[in-house]
Image (cartoon, rainbow, N blue to C red):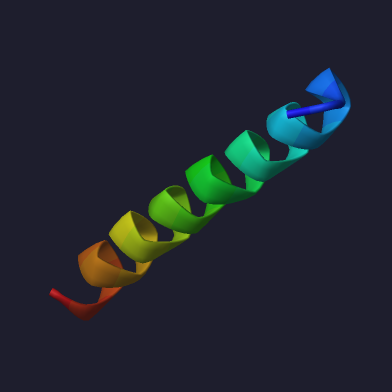
Length: 29
């Protein structure tokens, strides 16, 4: 990683994706 901002952005997207999946699973079930 050359930029800390990039790593932070990717991590944020990953966390948001997991939260979205968990939320969707909760709604479906």
